[in-house]
Image (tube, rainbow, N blue to C red; front, side):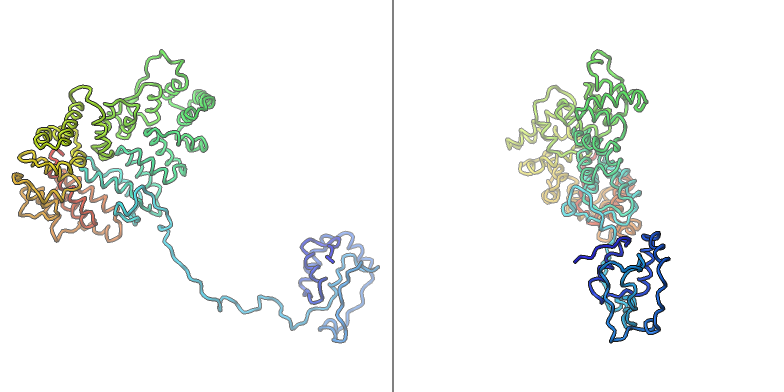
Length: 573
């Protein structure tokens, strides 16, 4: 039968009592008895005290009972399970009167020998904290050739400063390398990883690449911080994907960059009452600049301002202001705005001329695939003449000549289209598009020399270097650079001598960059070498040698050759 808990017994004592009723083997020691009596005393303090006072004194225990276990002939007392006899104390527990346990029994498990000495020593695995940080990037290391710990050992603030300041405008090879560094899947430093991520996003926007910036922010988690969300929100406003950012902002309003963004997103999601309420609060509490309030008024109430004069255009609008002007029908041109705004002109809502100008601008900095530019160039016939229309007409005539396979037609159209590409400063994009086709056309004279130079600007430059035209005066040194073996004997000026010195057998990275490489700071050494190349392209020939030698030392042989070829062949740069 289950043992019932007696009146006055505490809940934590009941299990012990049930164990005692199950058999006589359980014998609590004196300390436990005292603890139970003290504990039970609180529950029976009133009535038990009175009953004990009226109970006659118990006879004194015999010396034998006090000094040791009972005699073997005397059976041990079995706990009573029935009601207490008259005269017994009401708080008394049957088995509290049992004799003390045998002194030979072990007192406590704490007297056992320690286990640690005999146990096997656990195997401890040490993992660096940096390896626990997830890598962030859009291109796998296997494709870029850069290690996942590219930024290891460098200070995040120093890396952020370098990413923001390294100039790449004059060199397509440096532009390509910068995009590779920004988009490669790399693990941020243990300290300052957030700062480095924000710097990568900012430089992508500066280069006119909001689409990759948006994708990189989404991979990293755009809602994990307010700074990340701000950059993600700006990128989506320029790419036309603001629906995603507004939906996230509706769930997490604390991430809003400003009050105007909450009003815009509420309206964008179709919640016009909330947008109107927020706008009235912004008016009453002066939470938004007066110019932006006027813009939001027209955005939410277009019928009220139908005949109103246009608003004064701001000189430096942010992406939200730009989109608001676009929404009310007063779209602003992007030619005098930062490059990232040019990406907004690539959408179908912009006119063809605006799309062409934006595509040339982004191709010039390496932020647009040349095939996208070609698609816009050949979309339709030129609408007028002069400026960009002449470039469109020249490229269309050249492409038609290539399709015919006529060497005479190509010879007539190639010089004109090349001058047009030089005017737009998109020669390398043109070379990427047409180098392979030019290689199949049998040209001669000046057309052959020009075609060979164009092919040297393409990724297949080394193949072209083995078949230089006989009439090309500088062909020997340029071909040697394409093959990676230029010599001082072939060099004819200071620039060529500096390039030859970088490709010499005993060339090495400068001491300050070699220290970075020895410390494993690969990413920082590449960025500093890019700085040196920009200074070398401006005339500091020693820096030019150091930069090219560093690129070769870290395995960027292709970057070193293409950068040197572009410096020699793109004269206007």
